[in-house]
Every structure is written in C-alpha cells, then in structure tokens.
Image 1 (cartoon, rainbow, N blue to C red):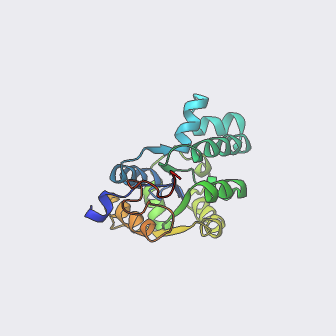
Image 2: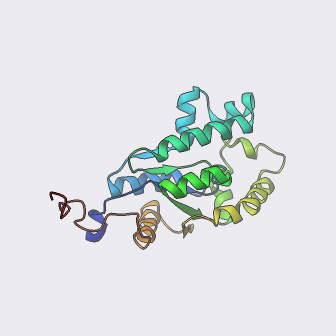
Image 3: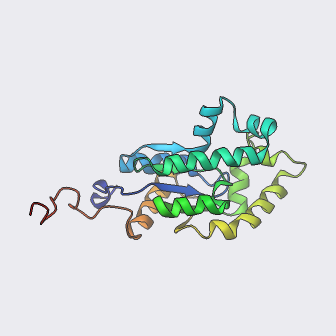
Length: 198
C-alpha cells in the first residue's frame, strides 16, 4: 500500500454492492484490513440473528421476509462506526436501502461480467436464487435486471478476472480517494478546531 493510503481515515461506511460472485466479501475483507476498520457482511448478520442460513430463511420464510430483515440490518449497520460492509446481491435493489446507504455511507458497485460471475458461483450450492434448471441463464437474467440499479451506486469499480483480491482492493480505495467525503483530510482529525473556546 502506498504511503498516502496508509494514513487514510474513513469517515463513513463503505458499502459494497453487486452480484453474487463479484467479490464483495473477499475484496471487502482486504479493504477493511488495509484501512484498519471492521469488515461486516449483512448476510452474516442476518444469519447470526436468525440462527439459520440464508438458504434456510428463503426456504422457510420466503424472499420478502428475508428482504425485510436485510433492510433492518442495513439500517443498523449504517449508523455504526465507519466500516466496510458487504451486502447481498439483492440489497441495493430496494429504494429505501439505496437511500439509507446514500445518507450514511458510500456505495461501491463491484462490476463484473457474466462469465466472471458464473466461473465464481457455478460450483457453489449456497445461492438460493440459482437453484433452477438453468442456473447460468438465471444468473444472466438477474444481472440484466439488476445492472441499471447497481449503476446508481456512487462509485463503480470494474472487476477483472486477472486482478488479485489485493489489487482489486487497492483499485477500490483509489476510486474512493477521488470521492469527496469518504476520507478525512490529512491531519484534519488531529488538529483542534479553532475559535471554539470563545
């Protein structure tokens, strides 16, 4: 990491959005390590509270129930200390979720094409939405439907198959440095405010 990134102080949560397989968890973990802040996963928070896997929640209570819990968790995490947050693929689709992220954090779309996504998810059976007769076709449909909403993210970073997790994390941080209000200005947190004692 370059010297100008080692002293970055995060002012608001970074919220990673995008499709399953985009790398939100792996890249998010690395970003959090580089910035010295907590990494959180909205799906894991839901699983912990429900004591059931995402697939089990979908099967027992349905997607609408899951989405409601997802919104509750997101609202809580947005008001916590600055962190890096990975969200489920459907979280950013809800207008209320986009609004609370925009108010309290900064959204980053990890944008990946269909082949990259499919190569990453095709051997996993933990994706309830892909339990169909044609999972790649289902994934393509989801990507096509969701991309216009993901494109509303404040920051868009293109994923590429040749990029390592660390390289992708640095690419995201560089994009965030060009975004006002994400990091404190150098020294701003250390200097006492002037004119506050009169």
